[in-house]
Figure 1 (cartoon, rainbow, N blue to C red):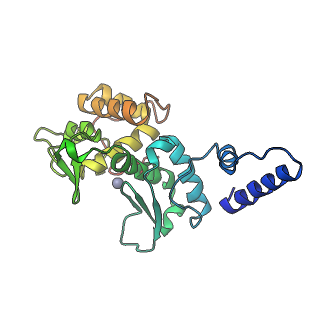
Figure 2 (figure 1 turned 135 degrees about the horizontal axis):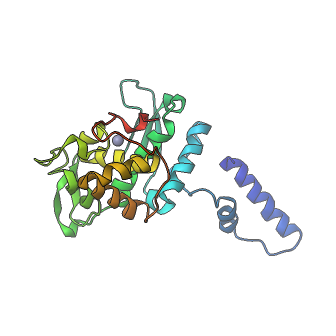
Length: 242
Ligand SMILES: [Zn+2]
């Protein structure tokens, strides 16, 4: 339901309850029950295409409302030289044609992993600066994501000396530590069975799998993906594995 329609419904119910003399429930309580299925995102979504809007609602629930509440703004852009989407802790930017892609859902799961990584798992300055940076933004020592970052990375861009391409779920995951986080999380959601097979054969991937399972999904395992995966091949882009 569109927000405007929902508002009209709430107003109608409130007026009706006053008219028939029962005690009116608070506006907040009505919104909460009507909106039970969706997270109340701080970022406005009225300007988004219907399909994107639905997938954002679904993806927010997948991670849990608490973990995506740092998202304040969603922008659409028209520059085709830029990637399909980009996200930080507070902002999600989507290319106008994302809704027409077969991998729209996968891209949003990937982008929301960045929101959880950079907006929800956050450290405090008093704990001191870590060796990782997101552009100019310092990652502090008590940021939970560091446990994941330090599995394969020396710093935000530099792999550990002994890192192998098979320690990653995709080629793109090797481009920097934040893409490793987002690609691995997407792979956990959409290819969990394959991730389990890879992890059984690679202790590094087992660590990544366990981190995502415990810290992002609170122990939840998905029955997604295939029962077979090649151990010595990786797709470049996990959003395109169908
Ligand atoms: Zn990304």
